[in-house]
Picture 1: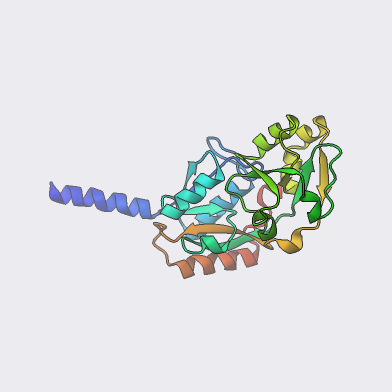
Picture 2: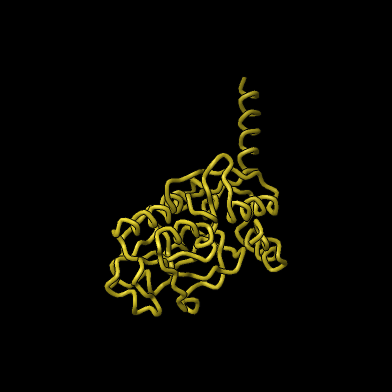
Length: 235
């Protein structure tokens, strides 16, 4: 009986170590929850699993902040699109998989955002757990309201509860119908110099993978440089 139990434990352990568990939240068009989930970052995670010769499984979360908490505890192995902030360096390590997307502002009609100073005196919806860029994230003079996700942000804009949200051009395309019907304004704003130039996978330092941190980072970086993660879902 002990030998049988030891064999079962060994099989389960090996199966677990051959899996990579990714936490995802609802963030279209990058991550759309479902069975199966879909989106640009979901494709990137599938490519990551193939690259590392692992079986990919998903933990679907109500918001990004929850994913970060799970990563910190080592309950999940990886998150797509986790910014390498100083406060995350003690529990995560990072590897780039695509150039960073541009950032645009969606606001109620009549509100013009042309420079950073135009954020003053506006009520800004920020997705819970998301970091945009250092100056904005640390600016306590701005009126920022936590929102669960971009879908909720659009709802609050329509109800005049907030003045603006910040999203990528890909998300603008995804929500083009809602933007047009609600007569919302899309503002180009030169923020790229303030932001990371790349988008990263964030791995838990307590991950369950049978690979060293340096090996994971090098393998992903080499694949990124070769264009392995490019042209996902036609983007």
